Length: 485
Image (cartoon, rainbow, N blue to C red; front, side, top):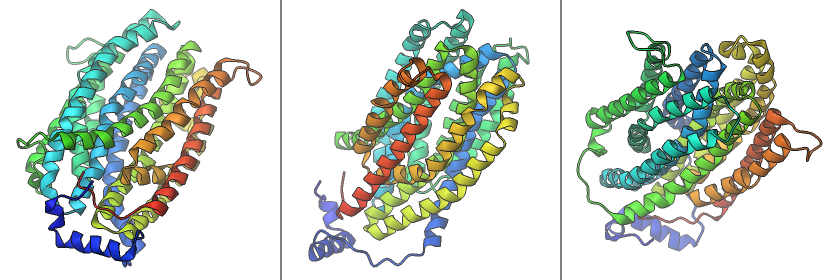
């Protein structure tokens, strides 16, 4: 869109636009930044974001470990419950993830006064999506689980667990809105602190509600849902306090004052954020759909899938954290007007991603048997889960490139193509391939659980290649512009 009057009066932007006219369609910056400085800047975002995200993943790990001591039925119930609520929660989270690069652009364009307006208007699409997700969670799981051959006890525990998670959805959405707005202005410490607090609270709350302490009856897997709901609303209260009273955040008035409703802003947020929501839904729904599919194989296979899934998701937080910080830095640098700084951000992200992900992935594979021992002492379940760590290792080999490519697409706000790539590979390809490999003799025999994981690995490698190709295209064809919306 054309710049508004406010932008045309900005001498910095006028100079940039004149420079563009003089140079034609190609923009070149004289920036001579040092890579190590950009690495330092990104680490200031990556480390707290990573700790916060790892803490979130640890919640799932703790839930799984504590449920496993109650028996396979409780472990399977939580696994099945996660297969429903986590993908749907990503619809709301995607809207919020789209807000981070938008806020970073506003900061780069020296328009911080517009940030509270964007946060306020993001509430409208966010709450609508959250409401739809809550209704879906109350209706779909009981029906879909009823189509399986699972024991009625597991179905009852899974649906009761999901019903309690529904209560956490509004708080979860508000938390991510405020968190991603804060990260967009380069403040990520609250994410880390809230993550640590959540982990500290999770163990005693699970202990009280799952095992029945302090006069509360033992609730098993359902008690895990109670603990999750309490922790979610606690996280929202803490981020709210940070935004109101933190010296680095209070000046932005994030959800702290009444703002004018602007449908152009709502449309822009939806245009950037909703494709991220769909991409995340496709990506994770495919992943968790395979978890649902294991219910047709048997509860032991579902439990083995859950063990490998928890570990895989925890390690996946590494490229996700890098991509989140990279997207913020790229968006901010492009808004400032420097494509060369954006390229430097990509190089820094690649260094950080490879240095973090590859050693961690190798360690997890080497110590896979000890890791499984944390979840179960059942030798049969151990034997089922151990081979899946080959797939986990295969994920890590490509995750560093995957994370960098994902960050570039989000930083350029190229979210529509991000969604289309996910749809083509993770839905159009993985679902039929998973069915053919896992449940039919099309490739010679039924490969079951291991065939499903093989398909996931293949599709993620394909996704990484597609992101890399699209990233190269974006940098080669990017034209220097300043957008108002």
